[in-house]
Image (cartoon, rainbow, N blue to C red; front, side, top):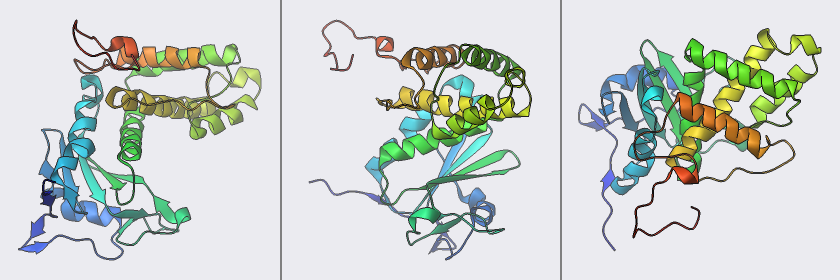
Length: 271
């Protein structure tokens, strides 16, 4: 078996740069932003946990290279911090990086800090599956995009949701947009098509659907079925719209038919 190369944490003044026992992510962002290692012109990273070199592609290159160019164009510089654990704060205490796993109720799997022209993304890595990390990575990216979307994207997404609401389309992509949709449906019919509740629901539904879309470009994923899930025909319509607005990078696809298989190549079972 080949020996793994372990990447140690960056050093400051000859000493390992480690988090103090209760450093919040805001404090850490100020301390380490100048110590980030570039991945490309837009993304950089900082390890707060030892990581095998061969794992870097799964944690960094693969998810970043799968981002559509039009998505990256809407983002500022992004820092990715791979932490042992993130612990939710209480009251005015912010989310903190810890070496010891918090109780389940206080464990956070991702968090972000926005400072000037930088978004710092923090992730719990220890004990978590890479597939779950990918989900939270794209969820944070989608959240950032949902607050920066151009007017064209805003208008067409709102129009699509109004069509769904008019046809009483049941379900949503994730729990967060499901709850906001249920609150919206309790309002009078004429109040469902605009106003703050509609805009909050629209932003969250975009974030949840965008997370699924970006994750699907990077990985072969399955969508769980259930009583709260958006019907497949409606979900596909949303994904096709996002594909038009944010085309995948060259050579990558969203749907099985997007994968171009040359003659003589092995065809994956799922195509």
